[in-house]
Structures are given as structure tokens and as C-alpha cells.
Image 1 (cartoon, one colour):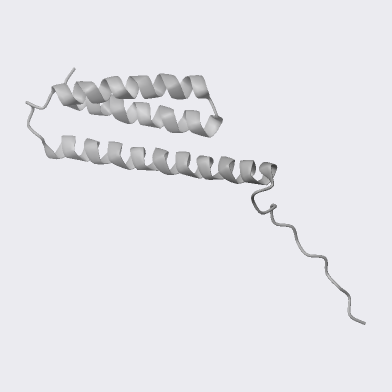
Image 2 (image 1 turned 30 degrees about the vertical axis):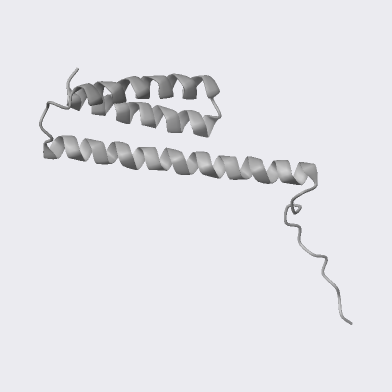
Length: 104
């Protein structure tokens, strides 16, 4: 596998991870992550190949997708933390509109 092919594989796996995260598909997430890690290892094994503008663009795309996945995971974790705090009585309750008073 060339460095180019490995980077393309990393990008495809990151897309699969994001899709699995959005669908709450843990098996799909585990599979995509394992495949991504193998592809990253393949990229690392090809350090002897010169960095071309195309390879740099692929690496930047992989980085952008990884950041998107990280942000999505952080948002999900914050939501779970908030829900657990509410369930435990340690957090604030979800927003509820205050009753309106009629002045007459």
C-alpha cells in the first residue's frame, strides 16, 4: 500500500467513524476505528516516500475530519454529563419557560 492509498483509507475510515457516531453505532465505530488505526500505521511505514502537495492535501483533509470527529465526541460527552448531573440532582434542570403573568 502506498502512502497515498493509506491516507485515502484513513479519510474513508474517518468518514465511517463520523457516520457511526451520528448513528450511535458502536460496532461500526469500533470497526472504523480499528481500520483507521491500521491505515495510520500504514502511513507511518511509508515515511520514505516524499511528501507531495497531493499527500499534504490528503493529510490536511484527514486532520480536518479527525477534528470534526473529536468535536462531535466532545459534544456527545458533554450532553451525557449534563444528563447524568440532572439525574443525580447535581445539575440544573433543563430549561423551562417561566409562567407568564397577566397584568390587569
